[in-house]
Amino acid sequence: MINVFGEARPHCAYLFANKRGNRMKVLIHDGLGIWLCARRLHQGKFHWAEIWRGSQIVLTSEQLQALVQGLPWRQLSAAGVITQV
Image: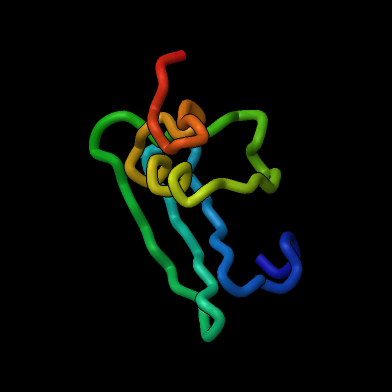
């Protein structure tokens, strides 16, 4: 991670997914150390944007919560409500 992102920044999260998109690992720097969280969906897959693979993006806390739950986080409005597209 250090070779790719440089030094891990406090209060930031780094998300990684497998090729099938049904497993995710999240590294969270809480200011004291790094936490590792893992999540696997038994049905469906996480809604990743293919063009963002390997890139850095910034998510709101509502978008992050929707993403780790397997919801379509890109459809969140400014108020944090999922809209139909």
